Image (cartoon, rainbow, N blue to C red; front, side, top):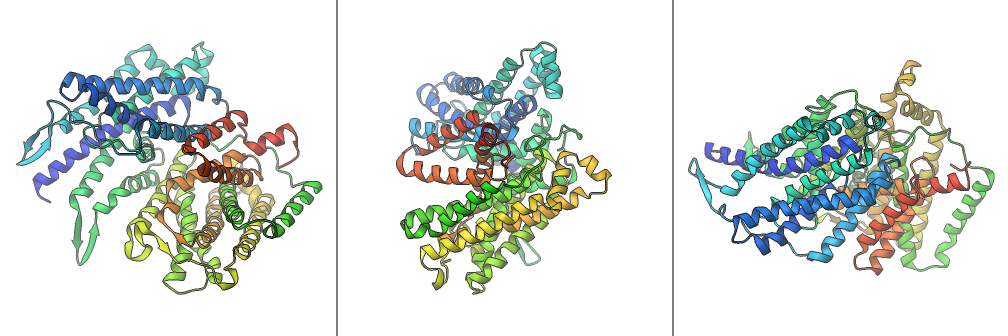
Length: 626
C-alpha cells in the first residue's frame, strides 16, 4: 500500500466513523439514562436516510441551503418519532424486566420496517449529492470527496456540542445524574418521565442525523436497520456503556480498522494469502471480543457497574404436579398419533415447532437458571447444523452418526467461546456472545470451498427409513422431548442449583466454595450441544443449510421465544417457540405486511403480559405451576 493510498483510507475511515459515532452516541445516551437496550435504534437511522432522501429530492438538489435544511429536518422528524414511541410504548413498560423492553423494541423494528416498505417501496433509493460539495480535492495526488471532508468535521463538532449540553446545561446535569442513579434523581423531585422522553428523542434524532448525512454516500435500503444496530452496539460496548467520549473513540478505532482492511486487500505472507478485505464483515466484532477480554468494561467505561440479569431473583422452582404430568403425558400421546389425522404441511410446521422449542429451551437454561443472556445463541444452532452437513457431504457419514457428532461440534464451540464469555457479566457478556456468533457466521459466509459460502450446502436428506414426513416427525418429536426433559431435570439437579446460586448471589456462592465461573463455563458447553442438536434436526428437515442459520436474526428469534413464554418459567420457552413459529407461518402466508402485524402482536403481548405468556398464566391462575 502506497502512502497516498494509506492516507486516503485513513480519511475514508474517519468519514465512516463520523456517522457511526452519531448513531452510537444516541444509543449510549438512551441506555445510560433509561437502561433500555434499544434494538430499534438502527430503525431510526434507516428512517432518517429515507426521510432525507425524500426531502433532498424535493428541496436539496440545487440549493446547498435546501440540502442541509433537509438533513436537519430529517433528524428533527426522527427525533419526533422517538418522542412519540417513548410516550406511547416505552413509558408503559419501564417497570417490566429489561429483556422484555428489548423484546418490545424488536417488535418496533418489525413495525417500522414494514411501514418504511409501504411508504417508499422495496427499491434502493440513492439521493442527490450535496450542492457545492460534489467535487473532490487532491490529497497526495489522489482524489478525495469534498463531502467526506465535511463528514469528518461533523463528528468532532457533534461531540463538542454534546459535551456542552451535558456539562453546561441543567438538562445535561440531570442526564448525567440519571446515568449514575436515576432513583435518586426521581427522589429529588425531577420529573423522570419527561427526562426519559427528552433523552430518547435526542438519541433518536442523533440516529436520524447519522442516517440523513449518508444520503449522498449510500442508498436507502430496508436492511440498514439490523446492519447499523449491530455496528452501533459494538461501538457502545467497546467504548464503554454510557460514555459518549468512549463511543467517539471506539467509532474512530473501528472505522479506521475497517478502512485499512479494505485498503490492504489480499496480502501474501510466506506463501500464505490473507484476505483483509473479507475481514470487513466481521472485524468490528473481532475488535470487540479482544477489547472485552482485555478490558471487560470497555475502553472508557467504568468497572463495577450495577449487575444486569435476565430477570429478578426467582422463587424456588417446583416440579410439575401430578395432574400436570398427566396432562403433559396426554399431550405427548396425542402428538405421537397426530400424523394419522393430519396432512404433511401441519407435520412440517410441527417439526419446526419441536426444533425451535429445543433451541429456545437451551437458551432459557442460560438466561433463567444461569442468569446469562446470550445474543449469539444461533452460533451453536448453526455449528451443529454445519457440523452435520459437512460430515454427511464431505466425509460421507450417515445421518444417524451425525446426530451424535453434530451436537459435539456445537458443544466444542460452546466450550471454546464460553471460556471467554463467563469472565464478563450483563450486557458485556451478551455482546461478547454476539461477537463470537458473528465471527462464526463470517467464516461460514466466506469459506466458499468448504461451507459453500453464501449459497450454503444442499442435499441433506434423511436416509430411506426416515424419508416419509411422518417418520422424520416421530424421530424429531422423540429427540426433542427427550432433550427438553433432560434439560428440565438438570434445572432441579445439583448443577442447576449451583447455577441459580451463582446467578442470585455470586459472592455468597463463592464464599461457600462454589466455583461459579467453572460451572457457568460448563453450562455454555452443555447448552451448545443441545442447541446443536436442534440445528442438526433443522438441517435435515429442510434438506439444506445456509449462513442465515448463524445470523443475528436467528439469535433474536430465540430471545423472542424465551421472552414471549417467560424467563421465570420452565415451560415458557416451549410455549414461546410454538406461538412465534405459528405466528410467523400464519401471518406471513396471509398478510402482505406480515412483519408489522407480527411486531404489533409482540408489542401487545409485552404490554399485556410483561412476565411472558406462561408467567402471566402462572401468576393469574396457576401459582404453583413452573
